[in-house]
Length: 100
Image (cartoon, rainbow, N blue to C red; front, side):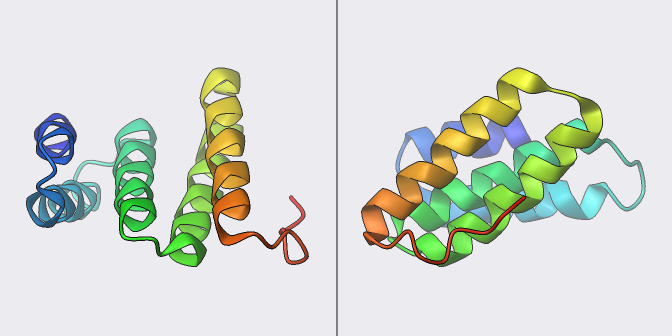
């Protein structure tokens, strides 16, 4: 479902992508996979960015960051920090950057 959502996102169909990412998260309750969960949350955060809802995007990226930290996925942690930083640049306020 994450792959389908990524294709939908790439086509600009954010509604369908959002539904697919949510469906993927729902399946995590029956067969947990932290990588897939992080990917779903990351994708939903990307959708928030496209909708200019940067505060919600940051919340999702922070969740993703915690998962990647627990998995010791250093590369994905780096990309997540980059996404968080980009959100703060877009909203032009760094006074409320969460400390992790």
